[in-house]
Length: 61
Image (cartoon, rainbow, N blue to C red):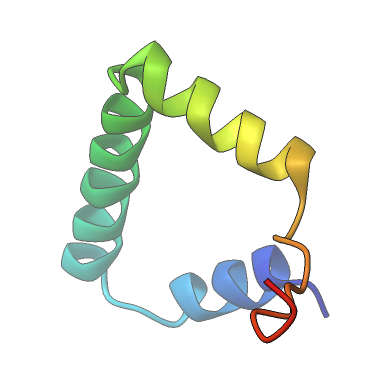
């Protein structure tokens, strides 16, 4: 089961006030992501492209 499916099932079991609060929080996260500075995205994309740092043998340096 995917995380999305698990979340949907959990939401179905909650009372209406809790569901409204979850919706409010999801909208908050969406607005936060939209207003994220372009530089943060660029840095994140660059790190993802570069991958993990190579192992360095500091003894040999």
